[in-house]
Length: 154
Image (cartoon, rainbow, N blue to C red):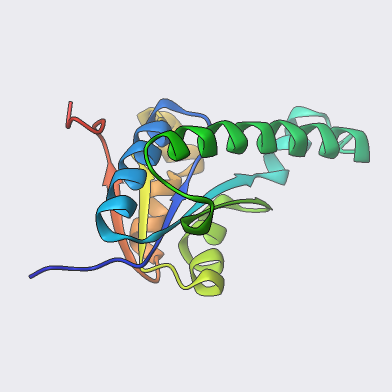
C-alpha cells in the first residue's frame, strides 16, 4: 500500500530530535511533491514559569523574534535541499504544543501527515509533564511518524 502525502506538518523546537524530524520531513515532502508546514509552538505556560509571571510585551516580542530567526534558518536549509517557497511555510503559534500539534493546526491546514521528533525527556520528566510526541501519537487527526533517526537512518 502506498500513501501519497500532500501536506506535511513538522513541529520544531530546536532540539536534536526535532532537527532530525525536520530533515526527514524535507526529504519526504520532496519525494511526495508535498507542501511542508514547519511549526514552532511557543508554550506560554512554560514562559510564565521561567519569567516568574512577568510575561510582558518585550519578552513576548523577543521570544517571537528568536523563533522567527530559527524558522528562517530552517527554511534556508530546506531551500538548499530543493524546497521552494511555494511548497514550504513556517508558522509560530502560542499555546499548548500538545493540542496545537495534534489537532488545532492539522485541522486548520489540512495536514495528512505529522512528522515529529521522539521525546527528549527522561522517564521522570515524561511522568511529570508528559511527552508531546506521545500525546500527538494518541490524539492526532492524521498519520503520525515518530522520527528517531537522521536522514541516513542512523
